[in-house]
Length: 198
Ligand SMILES: [Fe+2]
Image (cartoon, protein in one colour):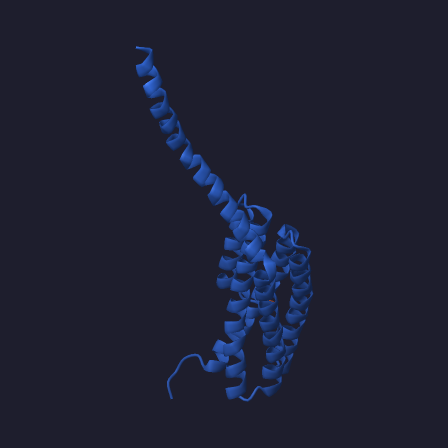
C-alpha cells in the first residue's frame, strides 16, 4: 500500500475549502444584492444569502458526523471569482447590464460550488459516510436551484433589457458615423453653387 495522504485526507481538505468558500460568500452576497437593480434579482441574492448561512451550519454538522473539528482553509478559487465580481461592480455599466453581469458572476460561483459538492458527495458515498453525503446533497440541491433561478431571471428579461440598451447604443454610434458622410454630401452640393458664382 502506498504511503501518503488518503482520499479521506483529501475529503477533509475539500470540506475545509467548502466551509471557507461559503463563509466568503456570506460576505459577498450582500454586496451583490445591493448592486442589483432588479428587485427580483436582489431578492434572489438575499434568499441565497440566507441559504448560504444555513450551508455554513450544515457543513459544521458534516464535520460533526465525521468526529472532526470544524476548520476552514482559505479557498483561492471562490476568492478569485469574488474578486472578479468586485471588479465588475466597479464598472460604470447601465443598470440592466450590471444586473446581467451580476447574474454571470453569481452563476460562476454556483457552478464552482456545484463542482465541489459533487466531488464531496461522491467521495463521502464511496467511503461510507452516508450521513455526510446526505447533508452535502441538500446543499448541492440548493446550489442547483439558485443557479436555475439566476438563469430564469436572465432569460426572463434582464439579458434582453441589457441587449436593448446595447442595440440603441449601437444605433447612435451608427448615426455618429454617418455625420461625416452627410457633411461630404453637403460639400458636393455646395460645389456647383460655388461654380455658379464664378
Ligand atoms: Fe453555497
